[in-house]
Image 1 (spheres, rainbow, N blue to C red):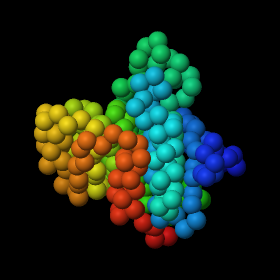
Image 2: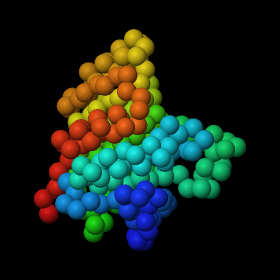
Image 3: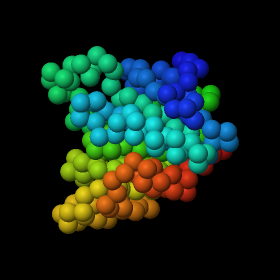
Length: 222
């Protein structure tokens, strides 16, 4: 279901969408610029622990929109699930559920009349970024590029050799152990890859994401 609903951003209007994500539906905000050359899923996890806030996600969506890239800013969990997580902490680090829903969302985009011609990219941060990498490994056929920021890399190591999409990892931490972990992680990915460190501002993350996705997403032949 797609409803014509303006977003809160003055220069970025979008549509509120109910997205099939496997067994449930989740809510998202879909932005499609004229002559879009691909679409990026900006996945958002549990509010209480999420590092990709809605405001920063919309900042990135705005930048991508200006680079002729469509975006879907989407909550991976329902309101009820977030309320349950507040007392159980069940969902916040559950990369298995997250990756399944990211794949479901990508499948929905590939079948939707408005978006089925677009190549799909994943953007995630923290645990959601890890889930995006796992989703890319589990269904390499459905994703064309990945950007992951401040990723929890410890949970993705077994999946790395199966990632085929060009991958950009971004971190604000200049600690040598973190740098080494990122370098080791990228070494296990056979696809095109890049590492950016010391990046903190959403505007800088958006700039890097725009460059990466613009270079790797294009229209899929109908």
